[in-house]
Each structure stands twice: as C-alpha cells, then as structure tokens.
Image 1 (cartoon, helix red, strand yellow):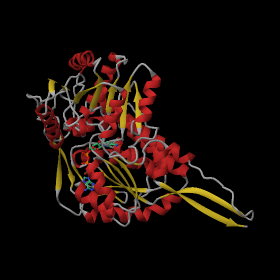
Image 2: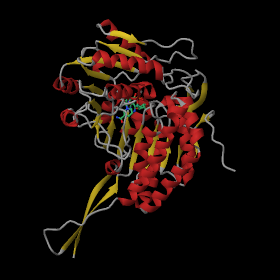
Image 3: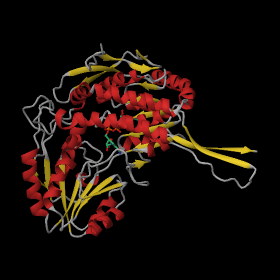
Image 4: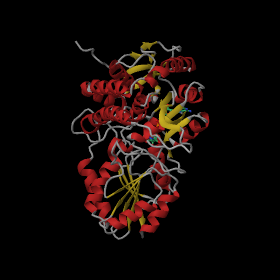
Length: 487
Ligand code: NAD
C-alpha cells in the first residue's frame, strides 16, 4: 500500500537520503494564512546542518555527475510521476500553507511542477557537445558541458513548489547534487513535496533539504566553500546580498519585477481589461510577473477603468481558498500585507484616487485577506508605481504616447516582464523592442509565461541575472570543458 503523505507534523531535514533531526532544537511554526491555525512545525536549521548537507552533496556529486544522463532522466521522470500521483495531496497542502485558491490555482502549480521534472529529464538526454577544429591537423578537440558539482537553491513562498523546482530539477538532471532551502513561510508544503519525490530513487546525498531562516541557513549555504553554484529566486534586496556572499560561484538570480502593462489607444479594451484580472489577481498579486503598473493612454483611460472595475466586481471572489467559488485567497504573510497597506496609503497620500478596495477584508479568519484594489491618477513618485507591491493592486497612470510609456518603464529599473495592448502588431513589436525587459507579451497578460522558454531579468536591471526555463538552466548549472587529443 502506498504511504500516506500528510502535512501536519514536525518536519526534520533531509540529508544523505534520510530524514534526520536538525542540530538545532528550535522550531518554526507553519501557520495557515487562510485559517490562522498552526498546521505543522519545521526545523529552524543552523550552520551545522548546512555543513552536513554540503558534505553529503559533495560525497555524492562525482558519481551522479558521471552517471549516464539517461539514468538521471529516468530518476527525474519517476519523480515527476510520483508528484502526479499525489496531485491532490500536494495541491491541498499548497493551499493550506501558501493560501492560493485550490481549484483555480493550486492544481495548476502542481501540474507545472510535473512539467519541470519531465522537461529537465528530456533536456538532460539531449545535451551534447561539439568537435571543433584544431589549428593543428594532428590534434582532435572535444568540447562538451560538465556539471558544476554542488548547487544550492533558495526559493520564495509565492510559488513554493515551482520556484524551487524550476532551478533544482534541471540542476539535478544536469548532474549536480543539490541542497534546497525553501522560504520559511511555506517550508511545510515544501517538505511534503520532498517526501513525495525523493522516493524516485536518487542516490544518497544527491538531493538534500534544509529548512530555516534565510539569513541563517541561506546565508551559510551561499558562503559555503563546498558549494559551486547558487540558484536564487526572491527579492531584489536578498539577491544583492547573495550576489556578494556567493561571489566567485556561478549564480542565477531571479529577482523582483513590477510588470508594466501598457494599454494604447487602439487596444481591444475588453481583451486588455480581461487580462488585468489575471495580471493583478493571480496568486493575489504575489507573482514576480504580476502587472503592478498600468500605463493607459488618456484617450481610453476612462472607458478602460470602468471595464476593469466591473470585471473585478464580477470575477474576483475573495475568501476561503478551499472553496471552489474562491478566485483569490489571502496574502501569504504579514510582511507582505504590511507592504500592501504602505503602498496603497502612500499612493492615496500623494494624490491617487482609490476607486475600489484598498483595505484588508474584515470578518474572515485572519487579517491577511487584501481586497482587490484599483487606483486611478497614480504618478511616478508613488511607491506603488516605482517599486514592487506584491499584492492585488491595479494602479493606473495616464500616458499620452508610446514613447512616454517606454521612458517610464525603463526609468524604474526593473527588467523582468512587460505587456502591451494594441491592435497594431508592428506598434506592439516596436514597444517590445524598446523596453528593457527579459520578456514582453503583446496582447496578453504579464502573467502569461511558458515554462520551456528562457525566463529572467534583463542584464543590468534590478530583476536579476541568468535565465531559467528549458535548456537555459541546464546550461547555467553546467560549464564548458575542452579536451585536446594530440594524435
Ligand atoms: P525574499 O528575498 O525575502 O526570500 C527569498 C528566499 O531567500 C527565502 O527562502 C528566504 O528565506 C531567503 N533569504 C532571505 N534572506 C536571505 C539571506 N540573507 N541569504 C540567503 N537567503 C536569504 O523573497 P520572498 O519575499 O520570499 O519572495 C518574493 C520575491 O521573490 C519578490 O520580490 C518576487 O518578485 C521574487 N520572485 C522572483 C521570481 C523570478 O523568477 N524573477 C519568481 C518568484 C518570486
């Protein structure tokens, strides 16, 4: 009979193929953002745990790196099947720990997770080398990629499964051993995920999992001399610290964004307004690709605003994330909710008009339920325009031309995703080519992405460095090697 996987317990850490006790007796409570109840406890790991995990990963790394990619792919495929088998359990744990609506969103995250494992397996099998010419005809040259060795992965709480797996699945498939540290506020569902997929048969020490506070275990992992590469998904502020602490190691940094969403005067307004529902309210706005700044041409602003207000009233149902009717759940944690209050308050104080929402909804089990919020007359000096709010907000700033939109987007320094709505595709392409962003959607929400395509912030912006998605991340966690054969 298959093992029963349950979220509610005291979780240890997973090192060297075994669940173990942390060296620390301290615990972190996992509190459901929707009910306020303690649903599990996880270990508050420490530097001794990181030393142990890195030691196990180093011991395992040579054999895993030199194993056939077809064998590694087989283990990854088995892991994806185990996850698919536990789709319901994992989706419910995600809703409980993260707060996202079960029916509308949590199942989708588990399905995408399956895809990350299977895609990494397929990509690993197809990695190949070349045989470039030598200057000397008596030599033969082999050029191919080798894994880095030990990779540390640190992930956020907004997409607790996929944001870790988009990095560690390809890192594993490429032949690295891994230590994963999830965000503390979604560490319990992450532990459950680990329990499900490690049964695939990873050799001991190839995959390790430590929970704890980022400034403690995360920092120790980044600075550890036994770690060769770091994959980090999280905020700009933490990314900057990690870039420094992990200096000299290969790094992927997937950081924040503010998803500028432009509506030009020739746009299909209904289509654009429909896309706002997804851009601003998916995961209650807690998505790095969320639309958080709406630059709308003055000629259509009033009509667009009216449409967005009526669609929000009609389609956004804030409440219990386990209820099938709910389309938006609570924010994940108090720090995030405080930022929502601060940014809305700052905007109103500086002259924005609060059209709808703006508060935490009363009469619900916790104070984390932020209302779907629409603000008009937003200006560039407001926090809600210039930084990442990470909440369910639609801040509208009026523009007069395409060029004004492009200048504003490039001014705030983020470079992750952007969207433009226009019926003229040439105009849409001109916008896409002029904004500094790693990804631009023409006539689709900022929250539209496809997992097999390279995703990440444009170099030189606040949004990070490197790409995840498809074979890009396999390349990030491997490096070229040249061998010359003198005949
Ligand atoms: P965060 O930076 O606070 O935390 C992210 C992770 O880093 C957590 O696991 C945390 O424990 C750890 N951490 C914290 N301090 C650390 C330190 N000093 N050293 C090492 N690790 C440390 O971010 P968050 O609030 O969890 O997540 C939200 C942020 O993530 C947003 O800015 C969002 O845009 C970003 N994000 C980016 C992407 C992307 O692909 N670009 C995807 C999802 C989320």
